[in-house]
Image (cartoon, rainbow, N blue to C red):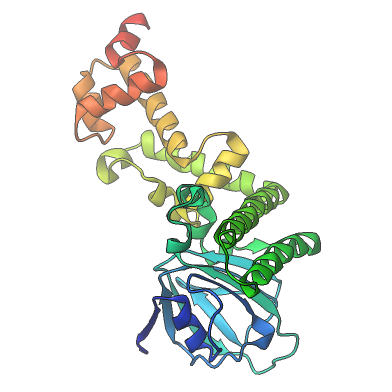
Length: 302
């Protein structure tokens, strides 16, 4: 297995691709049609910066996690710092090689409002199979943002440079959020199937012995069951039902708790343990938060 190449700085990225000095130490825009991709097969790469890449063709197939990235359809991928990608099998043809990459270090945005907003851009933690497939219009919109950043980087740095660059990055990310929303709408039939699968899994979990055997279900557990990343599943459920993955888990848990409270003589503590809670007070707190009543108040009123 080849060693991991870790890129700590934007300068490291330029050196990896044999490029000249970078215009800015914390942000770069690369035109992939002008980059000679000579990274060896099976090379694993991690970075300390954010990567947003759009390509129609890649000399190397890129593997992220355990899945290959298919750039041939013109998809966009967003990778957070410290994630691992692997350059996999080479493709012989170099025809129609094109695309761009925007790379920026967290230090660029650390003192800005965008730093706090980054956690809202959940697509940075999506699996590659959940990449964003862009229409021609969407490609042009994102490309205009990238061109604006490129132009700004080629100007002399002044007191306005960082604000302009950061605000344009934020604009691009907001468009990505919009386009992901569009993609989820256009895949609504598939999404509804996933919603049904999730609800079936939760129903089975809370109405069988699985809860006592496997414990409280997590968002990660649900995501693995339907072969999605936790972030993508949560966003999909929110788009389709108005409730994210954690809220779905809580809904089925509370419904199961209500049934047990009404149809059994078990104590609240016993019910809490049976539903996978290590501490009954957490069950009491969640039940009241979701229903406005304590478990005992619900039982007595019912």
